[in-house]
Length: 201
Image (cartoon, rainbow, N blue to C red):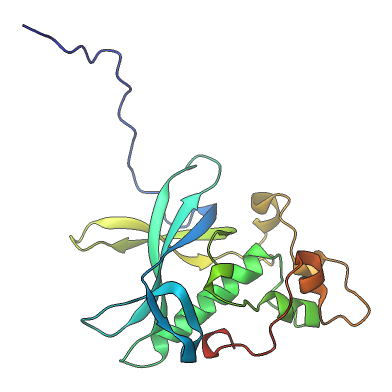
């Protein structure tokens, strides 16, 4: 009789939830849903549409970059449109603005031309792979079980931002050129886009 020896197998990894309120540096990637609506600026196949509800969203995965929970993954949706009204889309816009502030080192109260430019994207591709400081929350999955999610980004006005983001440099810290309006574009090599779609206003 053949025996398979499992004595040398690794021990199980704990799948305890990441504690609610934990601050973690994450990389966000978007799972393409293939739904485009150029009139809304939704191009590149990034958006997902729920055929049952008519809602449109970004299906996002967040991977913890370092620390105790490194390589752990969480999933959340960023709302773009709901037939029920503007609230879900407004929450999504608020979240994306905070993500950009966090990723690009921009203080929420900074309304300089450079900071305003840092809060603009040319398309969802700019969000795919973006790294920022996120706050862990808990939500229920379809089976009623708790799961860890990211619903909020931590911005430079938070006391722990600098320590946890490490050397992340953003637009607000970049030297402003004489005209001031293209500081972020010059710092990143990305041109600003004057005609922004409705979701990026």
